[in-house]
Amino acid sequence: MTNNIIKGIVFFVIVILLLFSDKVYSQLTENKDFTNQKMITYILDDEDFLWIATDAGLVKMNKKTRERIFYNQENIGLPENHIRSLAKDKTGNLWITTANKGICKFDGQKCENYNAENSGLRNNQYCYSIIIDNNDNVWVGSLFYLNKFDGNNWQSWTTPRSEIDAVWVINDMKTDGEGVLWLGGQSASTGFYFARFTGT
Image 1 (tube, rainbow, N blue to C red):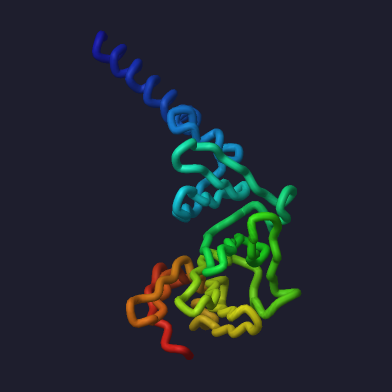
Image 2: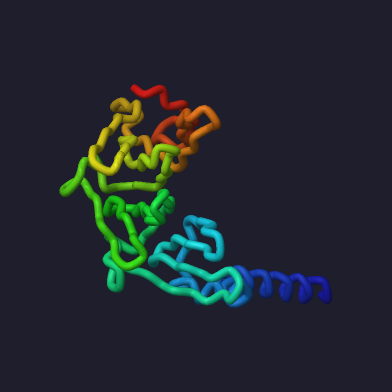
């Protein structure tokens, strides 16, 4: 009888912990201060500061003082608050990708937005990845397309897909020491993929 009572108490405690684990976690990590407990999607180290992309906007945090400044659609004109990735160009502009509304360039005061309607960006959806290469070209991975912006002109390449494998999303990109672009992401039927961009 005693064993059954102990088992019952243990089961009850486990259920309570599972039900309220997100609240306990957020209190322990002070995640509640990061734009209403939303998911952190990317962190960019910028000397004395961290730029933190979240599902509810952008956070700039001073590494020493932990002081935070919050940016969103309302105060700087982000295309949307669902931010996915960040990159910084040579002139100090922060490039920001979003889940559904394209990308933007943030100069520290306001955003200049780029989307399929006002630029050569081919798709507004799933702009998950962005990098700046050594020539200051902006590379954006989105649903169906790899996009390149040199500051004046856009180029786009279609990701390999068929009727069976209709969705390719570029989740991350990196250039190696020789300047070769590598892509990592996911597709609808084959799961994760890893590819070398050859220029075509």
